Image (spheres, rainbow, N blue to C red):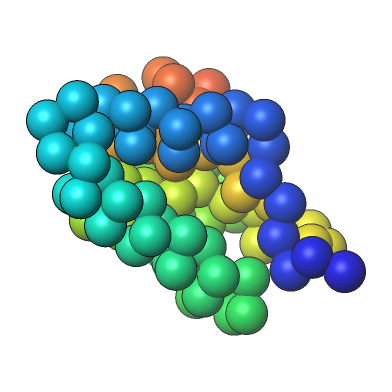
Length: 102
């Protein structure tokens, strides 16, 4: 079984990130996407390692940073479900629209 699953939106996020960066530098785009993929693999091997953000989501969700990108995932699912991959400077709370604990 695959250790993680990307939601269609997360897969699109990764494609969008590559395209945005590649418009200026394809080597940098490859490097950033490779770092995101490596972080996702680490999460899949140790799902509880990410950070909980009460201001952004409930306890079912965790966050890991790769470069300036937040990988948002559900760690209690099997396999781990990657929800979104978002630039940390964006309005993550409103984009996610997940229930928070604040």
